[in-house]
Length: 409
Image (cartoon, rainbow, N blue to C red; front, side, top):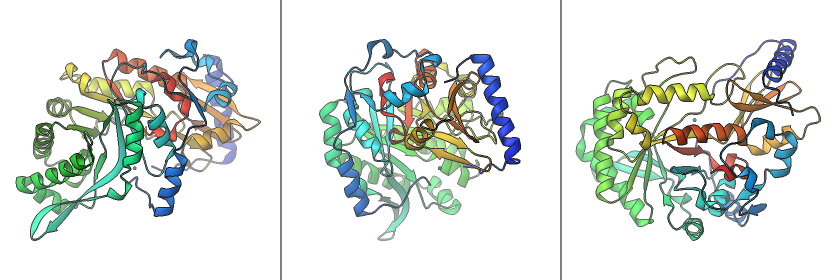
């Protein structure tokens, strides 16, 4: 996440006022490694916290349960009154829906457990795939197994027996030298695949989310695209032979000014899509040095148009990334925020809620702070777009969002 260095406090305050006036006059709506250290005490607290959500509702409000939400319906008051109302009813979004949960935001474990019917896939962010040498043989070790929680998985399944557990594996501790050797060594690759399959089958899971593309592209400086695609195809085939799913996360190919970043071409995307079950396009973290949304809808659409131009049918393999976190912009920096900080801002006496029609996102102004954070309306825009395009969605991550977001899923 980049650090924003702005001008003086005076200039920042003027910018806030101008942004508020512009948006209000136009739209009239005023109202990363991402792992963190863990210990046994934290795990005990995590388990205790999962006992029950604050509010559970099987059907909160029939009039508000549709995917379409008018931005004007979302107000500071409505968020503060309704945000804890978890919808545990039947699925409304009719495409695949993957929710990530992380050990460091244990609120997400509750969301996944109680609203399990909303998800086709749950991806616990538990594992790291590391290079290893065991008895003179190159293979892989798997870190993070201490986070496995069979009791929680059983609780989720008790509410949705059809849900698939596809834990995320992150390639960690690899160097450019080891990656070069690895991509040419099929035996080494097969041993690593078998290590993952053994763990997945032993714990009665249904596949993996394999976070490898960006890591390997970076370490090889994009020199080995062909070998990387061959690795994805080989591992996908290996998992499929075991009746397991293989999901590949990929960063968006276009940056904030719509320039191609060389992460993946449309041609390579179409080729990868032939082999994997789903490609998770991580359409969040719109990196820009000003308050302009977390993931503006136009940027999302341009990225998908770019990727699908060679193979429109590949849309059915896409899980379009949705953020359940936001960004807080102050005069000197930008911070990622979750629901607790957002609610704290909403309770400020001077808070103003606005709709950014360009980004299709709500933002709030409180003093000299601007916060972009998801709303029912912003999520509605993205879910309806995904539905029109025949795409599924993936949510990063459930523990960062407001419980009532589930009424749209």
